[in-house]
Each structure stands twice: as structure tokens, then as C-alpha cells.
Image (cartoon, rainbow, N blue to C red):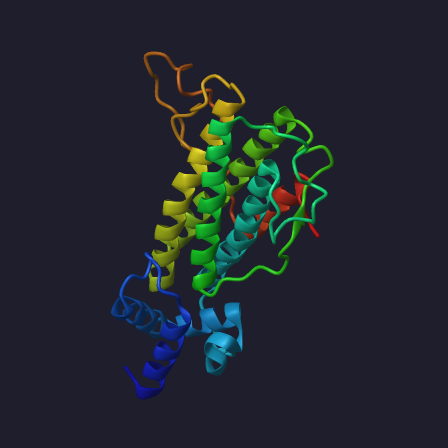
Length: 263
């Protein structure tokens, strides 16, 4: 590796936090080196600004990498919205929520279900930490929800299911786009998005279970995969599928259409 590029790899390696996704320092340095080798330095610089790689800020990167970053940046916004939603549902303040106006009125969940939501809040927080650690960014940091979302358990759970469905579709789209790009950035984001989407699916099923929907696990596949004939096609497959979004912008548009708004 050229000396200048090696220095850039070390610069980015110091910025990336130590996490389970980048366990040892040598692994992080190797990832950054591979990313820079395919022009990823420009990608990171364009995303995170000169704080990461100012010297590469004017680099040209592949359109496919730009599409990946579009999903990654949107995911940062989605995770902030998720944290705000679960915090509001628990009646807890959050740095991503629109003040205290949206906090749940009274106790909408029993003790067991509160534990589900507390775990989901922690999981969304970990997702956000990992995404930010990759240098991804999203402008708005605080979000509000439609009036009445947290006035009753029924309204809150119905909204939560819709919210998680958008998250799932966004991560499915990120997997599809990222997996088609044969570079380090594509592999990284595809793997991370696949790991996160599994957790978002758990959240939606738990919400459906709390709401008493039957069955809570209502599909054979996510996305647009068709079902083959089964012994009882109605059991575990209502035919509902999540939208696989073509871009992060499309997922953000659907979040706005739900009534989520940047505060």
C-alpha cells in the first residue's frame, strides 16, 4: 500500500470504534485498507466529512457505493426513530424524541411487554452506535409522531408494526443493493444489514403478539418471494410481504408518509 494511503487507513482506523463488528484493531485496519484500495476513502469522506478523510473528500466513487451509502445514512435516521418510538412507548425521555409531547399516556404495557420494549430500545441503540461507527450520517436527530400514537395501546402497537415494516423493507433493500457490489463496502453493509433486519423482524412479531394478532408470525418470506403450496397455506403465511425499498430515500419517504416528522 502506498505510504499516503497507509496513513489514511490509520487515520480512519482510529476513528472507527472498537465494537463486536470490528473486534481487533488489526481487523479494522485491514478493512479500512481494503476499502481505500477500491476508492472507499472517498465514500467515507463524502459521508462523514473531513473529520474522517479530508484529503479524500474530492475523490470520485462508484455510483453503486453511493446507493449503498444512501441506505446506510437512511438507516441512521431509522434507528433514531426506532429509539424515539420505543422510548415514548415506555414513557421514557430520549435524545431523539420531540420533547415530552409524545410520551405514552399512562401504562400501556404490562411488565412482561415492557421488558420486550426495553430490549428493543437497547437493540435499536446498539444498531445506531454501530452505524455511526462506520461514519454514516443522517441530518435530523429528533422526531415526532402523529397525534394520538401513544394515547392507547391499540394505536401505539398498530403504528409500531407499520414502523418496523418500513425498517425491515429498508434493510432488505440495503442487503440487495450492497450484495450486488463486489467491494469491501458492499460486503460490510450487506452483512450488517442482514444482521439487523433479523432483529427488526423479531420486533414486529413481538408487537403483533402483544396486540393479539393471530398468528403473530404471519409470513413465510419477507420481501417479494412468492410462496409455494403448503399443507395449510393460511398457517404462518397470510400472504403479506414487506416492501423491498429500491433506495434509502424511498424508505424515508414512507416513514414520512406514516406521519413521522423531523422535529
